[in-house]
Length: 283
Image (tube, rainbow, N blue to C red; front, side, top):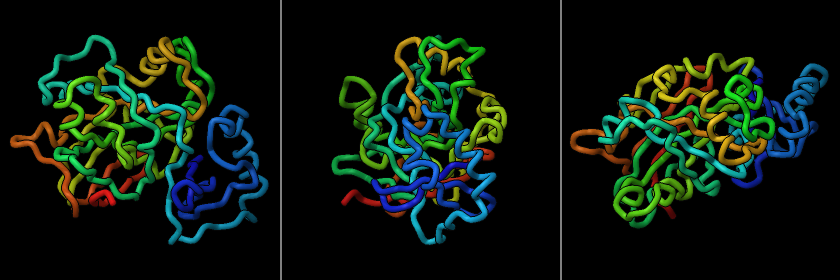
């Protein structure tokens, strides 16, 4: 299945994408949130589609696409998880996953603007495969890890490098501004997503390809990441793990290049769609 949400920011409603049609799923749940995933929501939604999809309301094309899941309790990000990206940043290849958190208030739709905030000078892009947790995960084994997954989606781990690297402390402050987590457009369930450790992903800025890689190049693959992170915190239904970005970020260019108002970013992962975000000044 392909889960989506629609409507104005903060007032999104659940829906399903069938072919090119967006079908309202409010008859099943108020939202795709922690309660939905925890209460076997995917199974209920699948059964409802069989019985009721033909008569459910269709969503007009002009209505905004929201992120396909509600704002999660936490967004856990993995840094330096592609060898070439670690090398382009000048960092050592990590022996264990590098973890940081991104504020959930950065949550944004797949076609919403990426905002350049006051004082920002080095806003950068990072296309990533994201995992959405479907069932509570604590100290799970690597062999059982994928059983805790609700689905996969695209996330752009937008980063303000000056705040991340030049102000001291941890990375979170450079990762968490409003609009810094464009997510979606669709959440694809595992049965349709394919092997998460063998998906092509790419990102372009103003039509020029900047990142082009595959999750086959992940240093720490998806099952390992879920198992590893669940050792240190309980992953709740609806939580997001963003698995890291390949080489080609703006900070790694020579000379470095960063986003500016008027730019246009497109990020894709095979089978998970494409998000398209204009870059604008924050109001």
